[in-house]
Every structure is written in structure tokens, then in C-alpha cells.
Length: 256
Image (cartoon, rainbow, N blue to C red; front, side, top):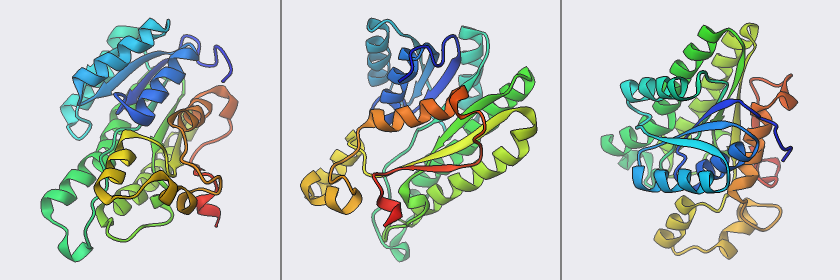
């Protein structure tokens, strides 16, 4: 990480309580950004923000469900009220995949996965872009997709659809906003060692030793901070000529 890469910038990170979101919060704060950390889990989110502040970073917490239009609107307004503007955002909030054949998919499960993983990204983009456009000074947004955005897995129809949809949202936003100096990109993580994947291991009986050779050419799970560093690059001026891309951070999984 380049010290001061986001010095004085204002960022929003959703799903910031744990996993990749928490790692992004820490990485952005160390890079000099003021970060609004948003999550539905207020207790864990507040604790994560406290750890950032203890390390000398600038961060605050905002409780928000990204599938709710009014809460996301309030989230963006809070960032501006607290820090004066918005420069970048990482739309990371997500829920675990569905796990049944499409023929058995329920309305509730479809709504759960699509509501956060696709609808939530769309709502965040709407209000973040509106703020960046109003400011008239450019900016950068990163949406978190998945390797499932390229290589769908069986028994995950809603998750596959959501993560494919994130690529469509990114391309649409990048086409609309490039003339305004606003860059929009997607990061597509592979197997990352997060609480979500550890819960999946517990439910399925798999282990990292079983899963890593399947998902990674490095035969290991990725670290959340390895995804966060990619988000940092895409939100910084180091990637000033990059927009509309889907960047795999997947140890070569999608290249097989």
C-alpha cells in the first residue's frame, strides 16, 4: 500500500463490519481516507470502526440495509454531512449464496439474495453517483462481484444472477459517467477467507484443504486485505485510466 494514497478523500464502504468490508475499511483508513462504514450489524460494525480509530484512522459507523432505498439515501447524506463530500465508494455488502436447485428455489430465498447482492448495489450506485455528479469533480466506485460473475456454480441460481447483474450495472454506470470523470469498476473475488466462507465450510463439512486446490492456483484461500488492496487501487488515481472493468482477484481460478 502507498501511504497517503487516499489522503483527505471521503469513502463509503458497505458491508464493513467483517470480512472483506472490514479489511477495506482498515486499508482505506491507513491510506488517509475518512471512511463511513455501513452495515446492518451495528454491534460488530461499531467495534470494527473502533479498531480503525485505535489504529489512528478516521472512520465512523452508519447502520444501513442496502436493500432499502431510504436507508441508502440517508447513508450517503451522512457521509457528506460528516466529512463534507464523497470521493469514492466500495459496494461490498452481500449475503451468502442460495444452495438449492433452481427448480426448488423459493420466493423468499430469491428475494434475500437478489435484494442485497444486486438490488443493493443498484441502490447504492444511484445515490453515490447522484452525489458525485452533483459535486462535479469526478470520483470512483467499486462494486464487489464474484468469480460466479464469470463461472456460475450449480445450485446458486439467485447468486449467479445477482453477480452477473453486478457486471451489467458496472458497465451501464461506467458508460454513463465516464464523460463526468467518474470511474466505476467491479472486483470479482475468488475463494477468500472470510466469516461467510468459514460458515459455509461448517455447513458443508468441507475444509480449506479440500476447497483451496479447487478455487486457487496458489492452493490457499485469499486474504480479505488482498481484495481490499485491489479496491484501493481502483479508487485511487493510480487507476485513472481504468473504468468498466471486471477485475478477478482469484488466484487464477477464472483463467483455467
